[in-house]
Amino acid sequence: MYESLKNIEGFEISFHKKSKRIINIKIENQIIERLIFPFKKFDVVALEYKPFTRFTIAKSLDDITLGELGIFLNSILRNRNTGCFIIGPKDPTSKIDQTFLVKLSTAITHLIGNPNQDAMAGKYYARFHIKHEDDSDSYLRKAYINMDLHTDGTYVKEKTDWLLMSKLEEENAQGGETVLLHLDDWEHLNELFNEEAGKQNFIWGSPKSKNIDYKVEHPVFSEDEEGRAQISYIDQFPEPKNMEQGLFLQKLSDTLEESENKITIPLPVGSAIVANNYFWLHGRKSFKENKSLSRELLRIRGSFFNN
Ligand SMILES: [Fe+2]
Image 1 (spheres, rainbow, N blue to C red):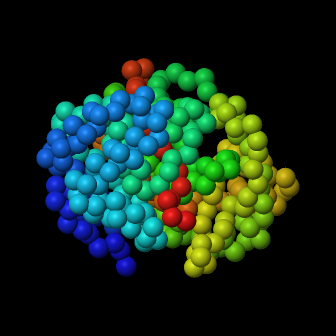
Image 2: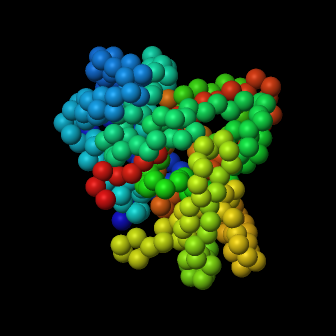
């Protein structure tokens, strides 16, 4: 049922201790060291301006594993029973800096698919800081409020098949763990998937900071080619047009948040979560109040190469 674990030289691969649906991939130092030279070939500006350079560093990473890593990561993400992996250095003290992590995240995602332009950052990736103070207009940077379970890309036209979230920095942070829920573990899936409102079109808008000047229409639930439920949902952006849609969204939100099967993951600095965006929901617990709180995440979202 679950992904069979592979042996790849220089990687330690196991099921995550919180869930067999999540594959934990630790990169040993010998691999990190072999990446330093090829990663030095391009600076981050080159990666931003010249998309082909991203494929060059992705190929360097894949070549080190004789092409096995790319195949493995794609099979995890496309397998309905797993669909998620966490990847990072085995040795948390290894001397990798934020620039290295941007490149590593770029290399990993370019073994999976093409990134979408992140409208908030104007680049193929976005870095966002969470601090004590915040005056933004969405939950993304609000440290002391839970970010409820959601999928990404609900309000854009581009396909968002997968997402990567990489932790670049964290200081004075207590709480703020990533929360994940696999759609098939959600107690109310069948009930809500079969409600008429779940298949109606909803209008999805977004606040100013997202830099998207259009609205899109799509239902909350769709079906994959085998008839299994897929979800595209976030609490803040659908604009219900009547009582039926409003109450449906309320029920959806309540039953997702109340699920007993949510998985709470404290993501180490330097590690990245990569998940299939059709059947994994993600969120964030609130942080404990601290004036010196500082955390920076990098995100990349995109589509699969072959679909
Ligand atoms: Fe998100």
